[in-house]
Image (tube, rainbow, N blue to C red; front, side, top):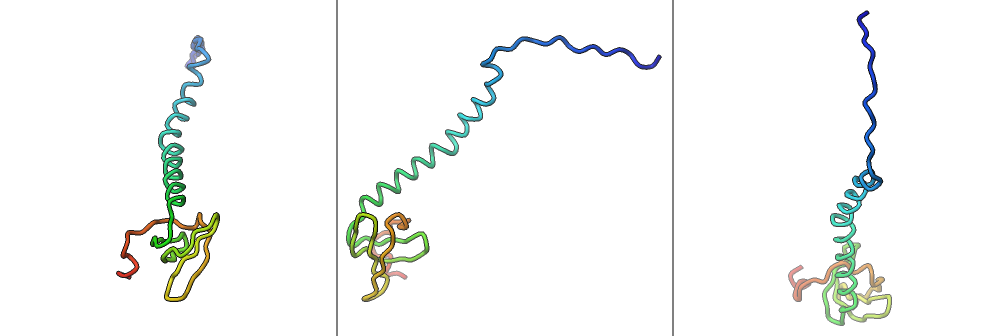
Length: 105
């Protein structure tokens, strides 16, 4: 007839490590491209928050820009205008601005 018999290829024996090799490679790439840079950025942000002091000019995650008046354990007081002080959580401070930034706004 027109149809020939098809036989399965003989199975090759692979070690356990070779079968997990793609998963290991994906994890290593995931570590170096996502986890490690995020840990480095979190460490830099934590160091910036610990170094905050009175007189620093900062921007919060909500976009509020102000000068640090008081630094507490978990809150920071920001002067956003003359005689206008707000209190924000310390982790909401996102960026430390260069001195004199508020004068240019």
